[in-house]
Amino acid sequence: MSLLWQDGKLVSPGKILPGDIVHKGMRVWDPNRSKVAALCHVCMEPPLCGARVLYLGAAAGSTVSFISDYAEVVYAVEFSSRPVRNLVRLAQKRTNIIPFFCDARYPEQYMPFVELVDIMIQDISQRDQADIAIKNLPMLKKGGSLILFLKMLSMGVRTEKDVVIGTVRQMLEGVGICVTNVLDIERFHTGHVVIWGIFEAKNE
Amino acid sequence: MPGSSQFEDIIKNICLLREAGDFCFFPLWEDAMSGNYVADRSEYLSLLHTISIGLIIHDLQEKCNTQELALIHLVRILDETDRALSRLSEKIEDYYIALNPTELAGYERNVRGIIDKMGKSIDHPLYPLAKNFGCLYDSRAAIAKSVREYAERELPNMSALSGPVVAARLLALAGSKQRLAMMPSSSLQVFGAGPSLFMHLNSGTNPPKHGIIFQNKSIHNAKRRVRGRVSRSLACQLAIAAKIDFYRGLKDEKFIRRAMDRICRVGK
Image (cartoon, rainbow over all chains, first blue to last red; front, top):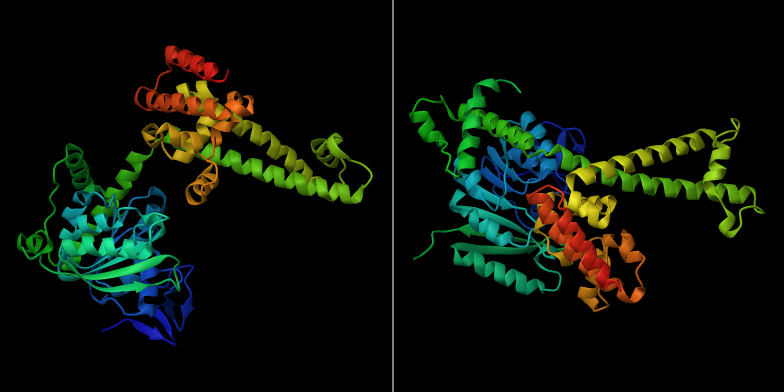
């Protein structure tokens, strides 16, 4: 089963929330507002259906709400106290969202509650984005995919794009991730790059 | 929240474990099912869902430091009120000038007086707005007063050095007292001068000498030549004061006297 498309728009079948754009009774997943939707529009869809997803940097949970329409369960981590309130309100309506109010730099705080997930999506705009992803790797099962949204601006204003991608790629490959795609989503989100990797066992 | 009472013990337990630095244990769903805690996966997930939401609500309540947050948000409201007042008064002045082109020249203008006059004549089209403008002006004074009170209570040493409003603005920019205490003095010096700092880093223009702390009278009364020096030393002393405020929280008269002395000496 793959994601639903209608008239060139990505839609999702869940319960309609206030503020959603509705197209033929389905919620429209706007690529300009959600990076995961942009990824689907640019190249390929992550295997979200029925999956267990760990979403780091959930913010107020607009993307998480769409993922929860497809996935079995979404573990959402957010460390800012203001958007967490919206996330809790959303999670009270959608029971397959499990929110955590923790810093993703210290995964030991929420790791006990999270099972092995199929997909890990990392959407934190910090300087140590790749480090955070690597710290959270124990929760990703073997063969699962890691989707890393890399914000160029937070990796330093002056560094070259290719250099940043190269170093991040090297770091990820060092811990046993096979990077399959590096995609540009410049069309929808300025200065963002998606790095998509498959987690394989580290060969020692 | 439905059924929160039965999970309160679990949540409290988890928090205690977390504070002690222990690894809190929560079973995987296969284990939970074989141990007959839950019947199936959906029950396990709903249990986890309830506990995680309860944990967040607990954390949110614990993290909330009312005094400090009140100060931060009051400063932001104060700035926004100032902006609204200046914009409104500018537009009202434009209106008045357009209707009375001969009056109001140069420095003699008195916008406040005009608005007060408008607020007295009931048939004037701007009568309600002018009345509200007066109210807004009064509420601005009230907010400023409470900002000063809060700042003197929360940041006694910084307020003594740089004035309560500047100290509160620095706190609002930093986000919390802890972050303010961790900051190097050079950051405090150029806080609020972000655009010119980045212009300096990117294209090599002159670096900014001062940000928010320019509002302190020891800097904007200083001679142009020594302003950079004064703001540097003030920022150094402010960084120390921020640390005292965060860790000790009491006013240190001896430190303040020495710091003021040092700042004055640099300005000469």
